[in-house]
Amino acid sequence: MSLEKFKIEDKGILIGVGILIILFSLLLFGITGLRVVAGVFLLFLLPFYLILDNFELSFIEKILFSFFIGLGIFPSIVYGLALAINSIRLAIVIAFVLLVGIGLGIKYYKRKKKSNSVS
Image (cartoon, rainbow, N blue to C red; front, top):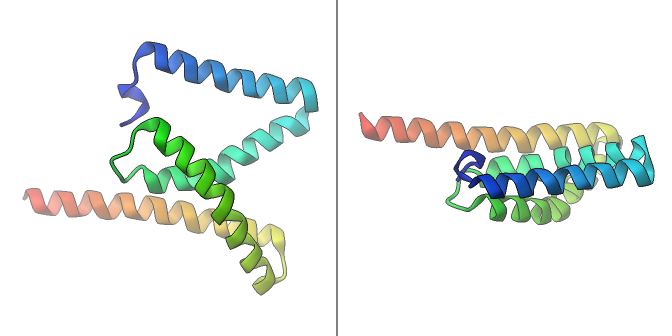
């Protein structure tokens, strides 16, 4: 289920909560708070949301599962890579690209498999 299938009220609530989180972090922590919120979204939510988007889950389930899976798995991958390559910044970039690539690769594979089975 995508965001377009949400009811109007659900989109409003979701946007309202997002704006409140952004305003709260901006007022309390300044630009650093915005960077933290953006980092949480990009590093914890986005890669695992792209992976979970290939399964039959509701939008809220995808968001919650991707946050908690990302909270556990992403730091573990980064830590292991940082030990291997001796650079935590490079490990973060590699882990992000790897996980986003996996999510998009699964989506491409499922789309290709679906188009082959239809024809």
